[in-house]
Length: 99
Figure 1: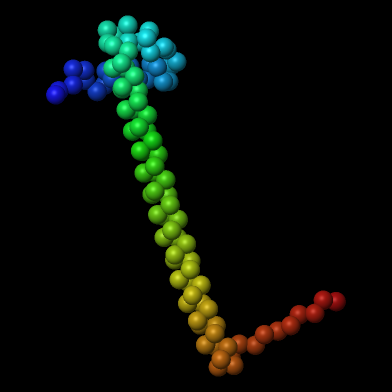
Figure 2: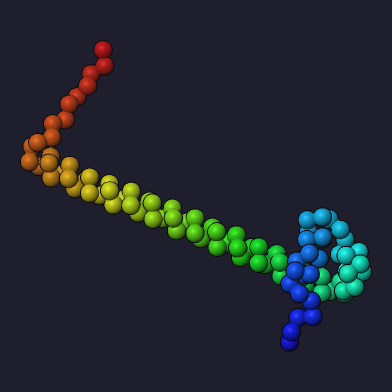
């Protein structure tokens, strides 16, 4: 079934309610559409926004996971290096005393 209204029309109708604060019934009457159609368009727009926000959060978390994994790997390598140097007796630990 093909949509009766172009997407731009639907987006503008939703924008009038969500962003400009007009009532659903007022907008629907002015545009010659049913309240039910406008409510459906609003709900669809909210779901799309939520999905977009979730995708952004997933991207952010993946980037953070990559950074933390790289940091962990660097620390593992440093730990192994210092442990081997310590066994060889090359690293000396100095004690500092407070005066």
